[in-house]
Image 1 (cartoon, one colour):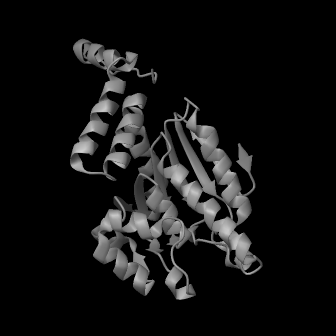
Image 2 (spheres, one colour; image 1 turned 90 degrees about the vertical axis):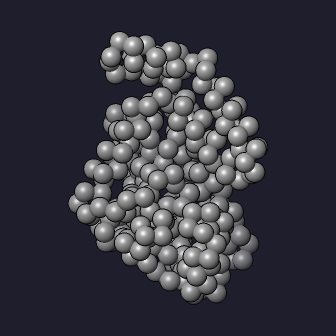
Length: 260
């Protein structure tokens, strides 16, 4: 699938999605939100897709957040619709049954940082800049930033970043745990593909269940989280892939997992 504002490339179980509005720093307007929403929905039940990488077109920006030129034309009701749409999109990305890697290739502000927060793994270019800057526009993060950022970096640091609207560079983002890894700009996509390839060596059902257990278990107490983990484990037991893993170990070969 190729859309002028959303480019998609698939190879070896990995889908690379590129936000393609470089002239406006890959900012989200309604059209881009709807295009990404449709693509995410398509991949949920596509067994050929194991890992998704999301990045921005060009070398300036990952995503600068909302398209403020479009925002200026919207009525208050339309602004509510926009926030509802982007929040649900990012929740769908977070809850997708496949790992999502954010390849943060440049500026990621507001909704751009929130998109990265909704992803499972964040790998940033050395040139990346991140921040939830909404308070400088007299609003607050509206696509999950007030909830996902403190869960990732802690309440105190999240309040500092949101209250000041501060932008941070890739080194600081790595230091506070906002990103998993930082690499040279020219190595960013290859680094993401390498991690995706490692994930593709694992069992698809196991990855789906591990993501489910982590995401849902983190939102509850330990005892309930352990029960969620147990139930997720039980899903893996009757699979052909589990038996294939044991057979491959016994036969000293690489397993061939089929997601069943």
